Image 1 (spheres, helix red, strand yellow):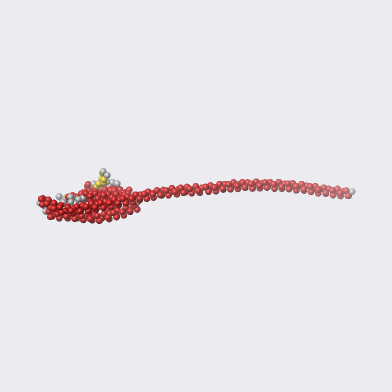
Image 2 (cartoon, rainbow, N blue to C red):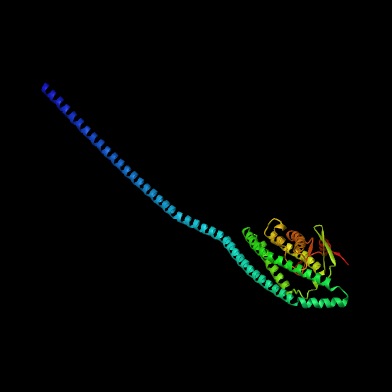
Length: 357
């Protein structure tokens, strides 16, 4: 009886153990299955995450390459634009430089032409003057005899008249010799002033000076051609005017008085043009700085009056003309038929000629 009870106990224990083992085995299996499922899910999530990261990385790399391509394309465009801007800037700078070079070339050509014309005019004037002096020398004796006979018939003193005429001829020749020596200085100073005006970019004043100097030579040549020692009434006309300058009185005849009037009028005209040129160049007003004012020989060829007298009255007219031209007014003169002329009342006040008769 005891054996059966023990056997049943043992069997019960074995069965319980087996049940426990089976239950544990099932539990372990379920746990393993659960672990496998979790691992599978983890791997799948990891794979998805890796794929997403790769996709994001590819997208980022693609965007970066696109940006790099854009940056690589932008510098050439910017460089091209910068190059175009630089070319435009250089072209804009070259344009005034080109204009300046053209102006300088034209000015140099004009100056060369002026010098050539001046030299030709000077040679022609000297040649004409030598020819006239030779004619005067060859006819001097015959004319002297003829004048003496005329004076005898008129009851005058041939000796005194002849001496006075010879004195006037000698004085005239001395004036011309002095003036010819200064002509060379005129040319040198004109060239120096022309270069100075070009450096200062005073092109209006430069053009005016070139015109002044050329016209000065033309007037001198014209007067030299028309002058004749042997048939000039200046040597026979008695003084009929008196004028004062620098505290001294001087006498002259009608020829000398007309030349002094001409000096004032020429001075006014040239002064007006010089003042206009300085105003166009936007230069400070300074009539004494003008080449024409310093030269003051416009219209003078060594005849009838001393050069100092002519220069003085030319400058008196020039100063007034310059002020009118620079200020665009007509206080001292007027304009008519393309010429500037000083007012007659102003002219009379400057010359203050007194009649001796």
